[in-house]
Amino acid sequence: MSLGRKLFISYLVVILVGALVMGVSTLSISPVTFARHVESMRDMMTSMMMNTGMEQLELELNNNFRQAINSTLIIATAAATVAASIVSAYVTRRIATPIQQTVLASERIADGHYEERLPVYSDDELGDLTRSFNRMAAALAETEAVRQQLIADISHELKTPLAGIQAYMEGLLDRVMEPTPETFEQVQREAGRLQRLVHDLQELSRAESDQIKLSIVPCEATELVKATSQWIHPQFEDSGIELRLDLPDKSITVLADHDHIRQVLLNLLGNALQYTPTGGQVTVGWGQRGGAVRFFVRDTGIGLVAEDLEHIFLRFYRVDKSRARASGGSGIGLTISQAIIRAPNGRLWAESAGLGQGSTFLFTLPLAV
Image (tube, rainbow, N blue to C red):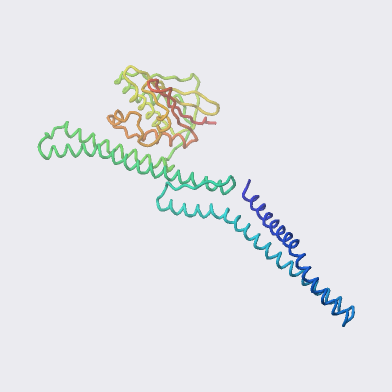
């Protein structure tokens, strides 16, 4: 039942309670009141019949009758007012209590107590307000947890290359290491990792604030896949992994930013390369699904469990943490890719039958009209 209907019914209840109490009071009090006045009138009538005429008697009768009615109404009205006030106070408290609790809880959340939750008392608008408040509090708590985890992840990512650079420099200063080209190459490699991480973080910031500048134009789907595959094909050859193309014979055009979609494909192919053992196979291609084109990257690698499928697009999430760190991946490529795909109203997701059964990453792009 809606809050408006409840309020309307509560008003009717207050009126009915007042009327009922007034009627019961009138029925209960009027006999006593009238009996008292009748007794008084009887004495007066005896005296008046002896000393006065009928006109004076009628006047006194009218006065006593009005007094009896007024006394009854005053007492009944007082009783009805008290009863209606009690019912109104109860109804007001039922409405005001959840609002007051929401105000107090919001103040606690503003002070950083994100675990604050409210009990749900009803299924009306106040109940909806409470449930919405609890969802907001849960979202804020999750955001705070993600923020703290993000700070910890960034600190860890920065610490690894910085520690390497510091170790090399201390070795050079202490003359434990020789200033050979190989040593400087190692320092340069660690500095490059830092530079890539900073670039990825900047890209992530733009992605999550919807500030990635996309130039969405008609692009040929097969050309996108072929150009990306040719670029990364040497890495597959060096790793002993077969890269296959699964492309329809027909030509089709999608709306996309050419460079950023290539970035997404390179990221998906790079992940497939990283998590597929030597001798494995990675397939990339596309197919039409209604008014959209579905691109896919399928591998025969380590696969994904249900938990991985739920978190794979979170920043810094890794399926195989030791392998990802060894390769220098920042763990935010899929997060950036998802933001790029969402910009033209596309969708990016992952599928897997389980560990050891490979995985497939898919994304959709709208057709060019």
